[in-house]
Length: 412
Image 1 (cartoon, rainbow, N blue to C red):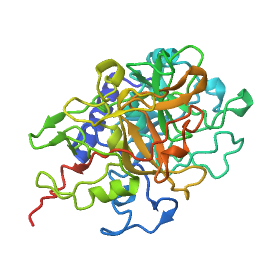
Image 2: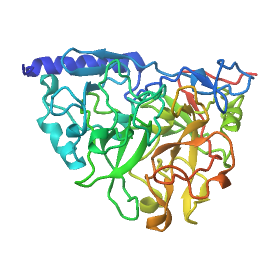
Image 3: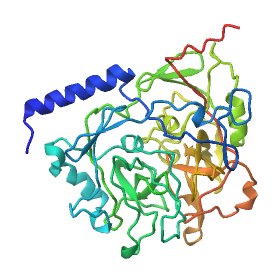
């Protein structure tokens, strides 16, 4: 039954009041859900301050994910105030498969005709809205696997319906990419128009083809139209505050590429601008400061607001570029017990080695989220790794963060 205008207004007003009063921001970051702690390879006991691997995601869980099933095919995210469709089952046959996938163009057009829950104000989510749903208790399956095995989806399946890729349609198990409204301002694969999407099977943001051939799952969203919009203030002391998220950031990065454990150590007891509670951001916090209107090829900059400074590098193709940045979040493959990789955001080109396209190119776009080994030798990966030959660097950059509502004052 179609809801009347008054009911929709009251519902929207309640949702707005909920997320502003409970979290104090228009863009509260949902925690990653990662409660396990890891060393460079496996699960460990939660470390304490001063112990190895302290400062990782499990030490700083952030806003605990919280959802409400509304009983009408919609799910409310109690942290963000966003209301989501429960299922990507677009044809309504009760089975999620290849027939439910649509093109980028169709996903944009379909929002206006969506009537899930009786609402008429659905929209295709931005990449920041869509990424708010990702959960890092997930573990990716083997890309060539034909069964799920011990893999775990990167979305809360207690509330959202989920399916891996449709093997009967010659898809891979990992083909569970979801569309967003964000197009890459440059191109990937030597000239392809590209859309940023989230893969809830393999736990990544990548740039995918924005053509009429590639199809995606879709979850439409409504409510909190300010979600994903930053409100940066330059504090004049080498720090930047985002009033939308309640996070304060270092204006500069650390200036050199380091291992993941060293990134954690770097943040421990770091003192700057009168604060001593700096930490390595979790991956969702780090993704919140990506500026998807910028890229090395289009603005001659990193994909970040120009208030921030990023160290310039020379990438695998010999181009002037910007680096990958570590998060505190471990990335798990095959099983949640495998802790050998950590998540990063590529603020420069997300490079990969594609022989048929001439070698090293931007394969996933500036603003992609992928993962790197926590330790090892980059020389062991001369042609990258994975289906698109992702560049494996292992040594990545660091930008620290702190929560504004924590005093963290250095009064010693």
